[in-house]
Length: 104
Image (cartoon, rainbow, N blue to C red; front, side, top):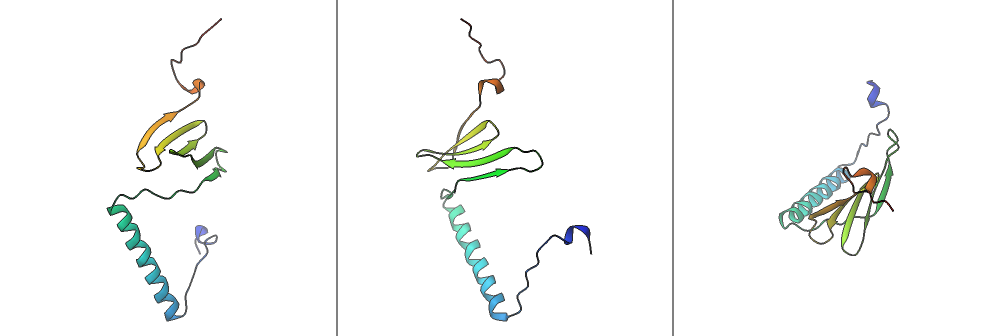
């Protein structure tokens, strides 16, 4: 057995009716997804948070009244909530080069 195969879960379906049901369910989801893509419907997004164990960087998504916001570290990427179009990026001043510095 290959090294990568040990950690995977394998699902087997013995009954013909269960296999048929899984095929029909998959076909229905694919057809519905195709229709959404065809008519350019906006995606339904749920807020989530994920911490990458390798880099310890946090990635999260949240929504506001107007935007869906995708966050990587300290950067935020704004997408229009209705159309899904990219609207812009925000970042703290420390991450922007040539940032104006004001003194007293």
